[in-house]
Amino acid sequence: MSPATLPPDDALRRVLHDEVHARPPARLALPAGVLYLAVFNDGVSRQTELDLLRRLPGQEQLGLPDLQDNFLRLALPGYTLKWERHSEFTRYSLVLPMQAEPSGWFEGEQWNLQRLLPADWLAQVPGRTFCAIELALLPADLSQPQTLLEQLRPRLGEHTLAASLMGNQRHSMVLTDFRLRQSGFERVLVLAAPETTETRAGRIVQRLLEVETYRLMALRGLPTAKDLAPELAQAEAQLAQITASLEHNQQSDQALLDTLVALAARVEKAIAQHSYRFSATRAYDALVAQRIAELRETPVPGTQTIGEFMRRRLSPAMATVASTEQRLATLSERVSRASALLRTRVDIATEGQNQQLLEKLTRGQALQLRLQSTVEGLSIAAISYYVISLLLYAAKAVEKAGVPIQPEIAVGALIPVVLYGVWRTVRRIHAKLRGADSDAAH
Image 1: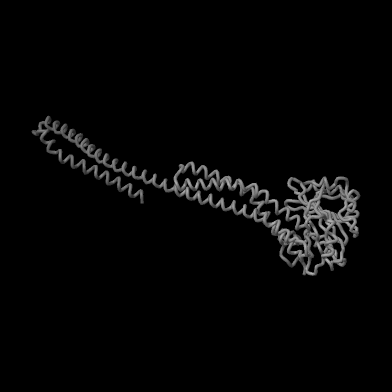
Image 2 (image 1 turned 180 degrees about the vertical axis):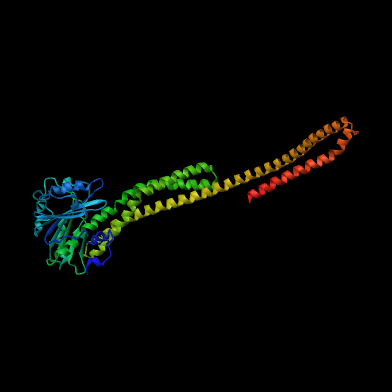
């Protein structure tokens, strides 16, 4: 079917589709050696890594587009090199043929790096080393694994070994002591049946290298958890004091609020700084468990399997990290609850103050009404006085005009009428004002 019959591709379709093929395992022919280096790449640009790769024989034409897929395999004279860039680290894997004879295992001349790599090329890899492994992949008869183990033990030293048969058909055997040598490398020895295919050999090596890489990355959260322990203990003690003060009213609300806000800021800062590391630790620990499960180990009597070694050594560290992460989250929740309690108490106190203020306002309004009533009575008397004075002047003017009246008697008789008229007028004015206020309210 022609692609034209499909709707247009999503912008990420091909990128996401090809992700499953992004880092294929190398095809390894027995016997082979793998020199593996993983370095943190924070602050290291692709251009810096490109400059390093260009120093390899015949790679002067490499460009940044060659590194955009975060994976590059270079075929070099006598060996291959695989470059992989991840979010936190970059991996370099040199794969070269080895001698099958045991006399040359893990000896410096066996790798012959001075001939294969430019001078000090490994030392100039940009970044900080956190994992370096020398892995030998050799053919062997695995019918007698216990005997084979006793023969190989001296080659890896007197340390406790982790060893197991791998695969449902027990097609290979791994031995390692997870020890750093003076050279800075760990040593891993893998024995596989001579008929092992190159693809299977590549998968075996990739899983073993990833187990150790992800183990070390998972452990990055342990120092952080240990560093946080004293700070968490201090914060928990301070929160307990704040809670006790809330219970016994030992401090003012404002002082408690300031202390609680400062504590909340410290806790949230710790969460913001370390949540990524703790999440990454969980993710890497899950990857370790997944890769170990893919090994499908069978124990060799007298040794631990890699899975048992990891459970005994890695699990306590992961439990410490998980406990610290949970402790930090719980502390944040407790601070939030204490803040809610303090806010409730402040709200109740504020409501009490508002109630007192309303009572004062009510008393003030009542007093104002009484004063208003008093002033209103006085104003009626004053207005009536002026009206009566005017009537008195008018009556005197009428008397002067020759009308036979007595002004004082006439005006005195009108005083009740004037008072009533003024009182009624003031009442009407008040009624109109109250009606206007009521209409405005509606």
